[in-house]
Amino acid sequence: MPNDQPIPIRELPIPALVQKADRAIAEASQIILGKEVQIRLSLACLISGGHLLIEDIPGVGKTTLAQTLARLLGLSYQRIQFTSDLLPADIIGASIYERQSDGFRFHPGPIFAQLVLADEVNRATPKAQSALLEAMEERQVTVDGVTRPLPQPFFVIATQNPTHQVGTFPLPESQLDRFLMRIDLGYPGEQAERDLLRGRNRRELLHALQAALNAQELLALRAAAFKLHVSDALLDYLQAVVRYTREAPRFETGLSPRAAIALKHAAQAWALLMGHTGVVPEDLQAVLQGVVGHRLRLKATHESSSSATLTGELLEAVPIP
Image 1 (cartoon, rainbow, N blue to C red):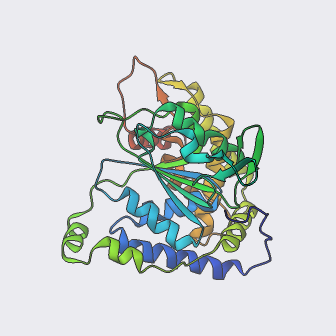
Image 2 (cartoon, rainbow, N blue to C red):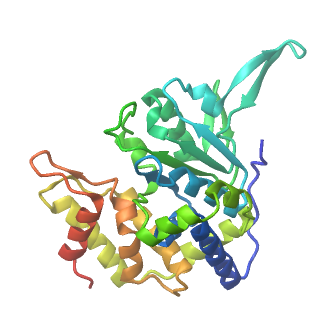
């Protein structure tokens, strides 16, 4: 089990760390072709301390992107394949009786890693899905009345198939809200797909990757992102976006305060990766769809819209101060 003691954050040269992050994005772009924006969003999500949900049809590179990020971030890593017969104990571990000691000993599950890939998370039953809730929110798990902290930092990257596919269980809204960001990959462009067909196997390239960052550097980037200046005008813009979702008649529920905080933190991380000295409206707009798309619900009387359409409506309806 990885060391769960807090990692000290020394003063590290932030510009050099941002260059390392840029290198990580460039190397990931050699694995997942034509998806630099999604890769940058993913890294911004993890730098801001959030969990990432990647949703799309099978075969577009969801798991490969998650594995690529795991290798580039240099964190202890475990993959959990979610299936319909998965049990909570398969995720968090269990206490097993040992004759030698005449007592029970806790055997930690794969959740005790710095980066956990929950592959096809919505193929497990709600009971198994709920085993992730405490871990994602509190960074700890409770087994047999004993609370055990998880390693630091702790990230969950989950992949999800569209809920209309056979054998899927929709994630409850309470668990969806634990993911700071949700992204989709979509089909590759024509040239990117041609390069995929002509190039080496993605798995071979993946195994050759070297870590570009480590845990201490990630924590230093997060600390630097949270210190990035956010002006009152930018907060006015953010609050106007949130207020619109609460007042517009087509939304069943608006964005929560937790969603507003997530939007701010994601915008700060994106601004850091872009080399900005403060957060500008374009930073918030860049992360808006990923942060709010899975949190907005339309009323039953309105036609369904994609998260991209909803985000576009928000950007049109709320002017920049």
